[in-house]
Image (spheres, one colour):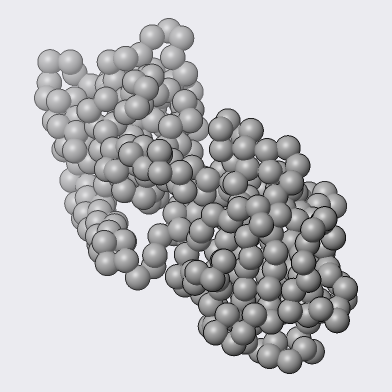
Length: 352
């Protein structure tokens, strides 16, 4: 027990002192919780199985740790220093703060918070509430090893999102549309954008929208970031719901259009252009006509147009370098002797 710490409402019990270092702490009746309250005490049912969570966030170039408390949409609520948290909302906690679970039923479930260690990296929790016999302390290091790999990223993004100084350039929002990421893609320069935003951008420029570095590597899907955004955004938010519906509607529209292209040019074999693996006549209209067709095409529609001239992933993998050079000459202008033709044609197939 820390010095000068006064007993709580359960004075007949010895205090439980638990220390956690840079680890998320779930509080509730479930034995899976890091701070697991005994289900055998009176009024225990007013505490949810997973009632609240304390989690660390890094600030000031990872030199300072701030701790936040989130109510996990509990039935009877969570309070800090007598102030009730809104359901599913987070607040910062400070050294000496007093957390009470289900305050409307009394102060039976009190937890005192203390911040210790370098940069407040350690969270010390003191409670007189009886705990389940197997309480796991996250300071052991074993917890951190078994922690999912994306937790570190989640903590970092939560910290940045919680900082009001970052609201103008949120790490969770696309710098093109200024909305939370959806179907996100990350470039080799580490900048991330909504998939649709980046695909439209690439129709005009094969550079990063943020740093303007020329993009040569294939963008990478960042599903963990999409999942994090979905967790942080209120699922009942009307703007978020409308955006999700618009995204699904656009995907359905593109799929339908791609199906029509494949039917017109593949199933009926009425191709307006020769295959890309034969040299197109520079004086003819084949190149300009095809490039005009794909100039506004993204996603599955772009891939359908490319499939109509034989440019597919399997064909790019199968054809020899001589054929790849012909296709590149037909379609591209930015090709040199040092260009990786397979890689560049894949970029054209997907993006431009």
